Amino acid sequence: MLCTLADLKTCKAEKLPLQRLLGIDLGDKTVGLSLSDTTWSIASPYQTLIRSSDKQAITGLQTVIKEFSIAAIVMGYPLNMNGSAGPQSQKVTQFSEKLLISCDIPLLWWDERLSTAAVTRTLITADVSRKKQKKAVDKLAASFILQGVLDSLKPY
Image 1 (tube, one colour):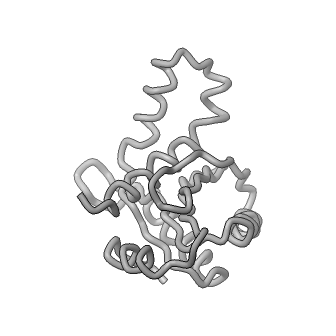
Image 2 (image 1 turned 30 degrees about the horizontal axis):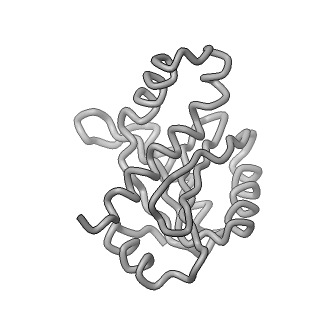
Image 3 (image 1 turned 90 degrees about the vertical axis):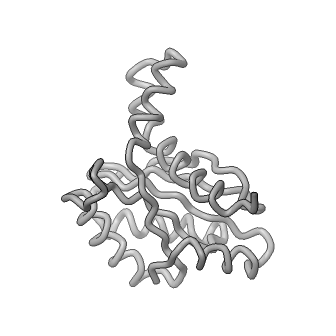
C-alpha cells in the first residue's frame, strides 16, 4: 500500500525490533538501494541492482526485503522543479504498482529532486573518479533519499 509520512511514524512506533527501511532510487538501467539502521536514524548505501526488467528488479528487491526484515520502502519520486510530475514520475508509479503487488509492506514516495545532483557534487568535491562515481551514485542517491525520510521522522 502507498503510505504517508504519518503512516511511517505509526509503523515506527509499532515496528518489531530489528526491522529496517529500504531506500530505492529507481533508474532506467539500475536501482540504487540503501538501508536504515534498526533504530531508523541513519541511512547507509547498500548496493546497486542492474535493472534489465521490472520482474528481475522486483525479484532482487524481494530478496533484500526478506534478508533484512524490511518494515517499509521509501522510493524516490522524481518531481519537476515546479513540483509537477513528469515522465520519470510515471515510471516510478508503474514500477511501484508492480512492486506493491509482490510485497505486502508500506511504500512511501519521497521527493527526490536534486538528490543525484547533490550526491554527484559531493563525489566531485571528494575528488572521486568518474568511473567510481558511476558505480556509487545510485546507492548514494538512495541513501540521500532515505536519510531525508529518517530525518523527518525524528521528533525535534
